[in-house]
Length: 617
Image (cartoon, rainbow, N blue to C red):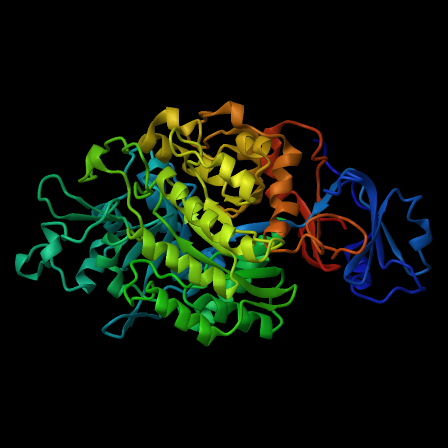
């Protein structure tokens, strides 16, 4: 790929033009030309110019083709050397902590060993102290106010030691400031100060709760309290669904205003990556919906958002999984598709199993044994709802209400089970409404093609969408290999198998379980490479750049019934596009990983919502 030439018009002129009525009837506000335009339109796959009037694209082709759209006030912007693509539709993300990470918490993804974890924590701690932003956190349940250091996005398999920093190593960062570090999925690490806030003194056995020496009897697959080999006491690292809850009662929660601010900052960051629309995969029983609604009402949503209703609560502590309760809640909600093209709530998300890295996804062949897992080689993961009849009825109630169904299923047993339920429900709906357009999905779909449980043919026949997270392979692949072995890893998210079977893939990052960088996901689909080890598993499952890009653009729009208004660059569609300082059709795959820093402009509905600060246009 080559560097784009300096663009010949200042950004101020372009910004002034965007969103303004054309100066002459039929004229465009702005015409980008000289670029490699990747349209995702089969009738015109590439072009070199795009014309925009107001919120919409009014022309795509060559500059000569678009001359009739150029009026006296049309801004002509020469973007030679760049690529223009449709805006990226991120189809599975949890944005709520992204802005918080940018400003307050520590992103531990770059760490390669325990020393790196400590260094990153010390750097943010010093920054927060210097800026006076460390304190002010209210500790539940006492109401005491004080400092706290938060971290995100660690996984032990990315670290040379193959373990997370324990409480003593976190104490070396700070013994006085409480530290809590969230794993990418189902896990937490804390320092000794957090135990003290729980009323636990390691030097006083009288303060030990029951779980301090012995795992609770209700632990499930994947639940691990990592313990000191000499004392048998917790070392500060917890994994699984229930284990992290043992220390959760004292960890501060953000105020509603802080969550909204984090959301807005996070969405602005996503725009800098070329993302113009997101699917927020679960409303947390309406909590996240309120945050988006507040941002939308204040006019602070920089990009588009579709929310799935999160009717399901992990562990079902309130009995919300009872089908009658689900029907009651839906009746109170009263809608199944509400909003506009900027913000909309539609579809329902639930979970069938856990995670592959966390050893709780439900698999037919046992996990490989690893230190610390009490189930060892007997571990086959767990189903969130073991009762098949009850599970089927839960999804039936949601489907009858009109929600599209989107179910997290990672292990092959869980995927097979969900697809079998889908088939029965889809057949019953199509018996009454043959033309029903059911865009249901399997979220993640890591192991869909295992011997004896393959769902490939059924996904294709029923039009079920694979809502995949390709960057998981890149960022977390080492943990997957350790847990299921290299042979199964060759079939992990089988991109080419999906493609050749005619199964539509829609891609998302699953942040905070991974970086939100969509370009890493595209790279993973092209290479199947694991970041930390450099190993490649399943090279036969690689797919080309344009096929990978389609999963992040037009297919993402299709998932949310928006393909008629976005996802490709065609006249009449919303002007959601990205200008990248590179020619994406040339160069080596490795250069795709640079694209997060080479996004020049992101436009949503004809409005520039991001411009790279050092850009000359």
